[in-house]
Image (cartoon, rainbow, N blue to C red; front, side):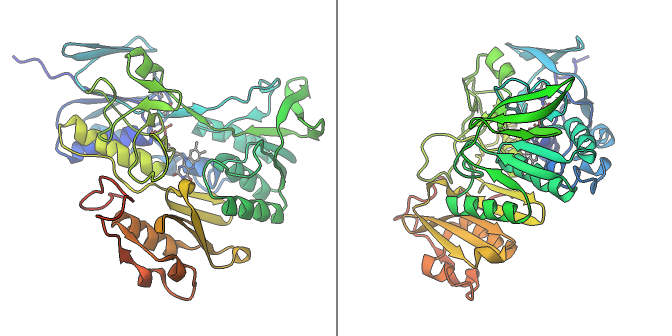
Length: 435
Ligand SMILES: Cc1cc2nc3c(=O)[nH]c(=O)nc-3n(C[C@H](O)[C@H](O)[C@H](O)COP(=O)(O)OP(=O)(O)OC[C@H]3O[C@@H](n4cnc5c(N)ncnc54)[C@H](O)[C@@H]3O)c2cc1C
């Protein structure tokens, strides 16, 4: 009797992990698969955690991406509430050990370990009612705390901080956002959009303190009562939410001797790590992006689209297909009633076209570099977003003067970029992005 083949081991049962195993099956792989996740839940989506789920408008069951029954039906062994704590390679693949002591021999290996919330390095974060948000368990604790909080301080004016601030405001709390940088969302959006968000959040009653650091949290008994700021002020509070970024989970990659950067597990365009056989995908990775024009070096992207698209590539790579991650990055953020959609990477723009009136809360910002369209940030302007995302996927541009006139539909300005004269996108996919 021939022994059954060793399974493919996928460590991390989040957005990337479940997308990867689903794609393996989609591509016809019928070998055993074990998907290990340290959270008790079947894979679920995180975006609602700071938005509808936090406000009680989204039930828990509908967060689930694929449940245990789906995994069983697809012959995938889903292990939950158990972490892979040790791992090593051997001649026939490798072996992993879980926290519960289970030993898993594997043939092929994928790391989809995601990220964990960054710590705020100040005294007082261990107090009760000082919370962070990454998991559904965190969201449950935060939702309960929000119900009886009047003065909420959010430390960090990034996406999660601002989404939580908007949700807390919608639930009736008085909210102050404390941000160390001189603008909101500084790492992710153009300065014009940062200014818009400052105005929009303040208009909705949220206080935003820029250029301000929280230096200490103090309280009595077991819960926070005030956030001390670097200018000496104290904000009294009954709930502190810390949203100061997320750090890639790279410990297993380090244990395997793979190349790891503080920003993530280094992968190539096929999602292969430095050993040439292990793949990695999602928030834990640092990889090349063909749309990062004008930006030096690889990028770590934290978005559902990136995790999903990169996981699909990782599955194909595990099966030996020639493939590459070349998707247009895209992202959305709902901050209360404001919907932002971003396609492309606006960071290196040298020209910005404002299409529409910022004050109308329905406009788009088109980023250009060397005269070519590289990104859109759309607020309540889905139609513009869709046209630009497709344009980027197809290697097209829209002249800035056409884009600036909101009475002309963007699609009328679409123009093909001459690949011989443009360095816009290296390695453009023949067929466009999968997203
Ligand atoms: C509150 C919140 C709101 C968000 N909103 C948006 C949004 O609006 N739009 C958007 O595009 N993106 C959003 N994101 C980001 C998006 O959810 C992430 O980019 C995406 O979840 C990344 O998927 P991933 O699989 O790489 O990581 P994760 O979803 O974090 O999954 C990784 C999983 O691996 C597990 N794991 C790690 N190490 C081990 C181990 N050793 N053993 C077993 N399991 C392990 C982790 O516990 C986790 O369950 C949001 C994120 C959060 C937290």
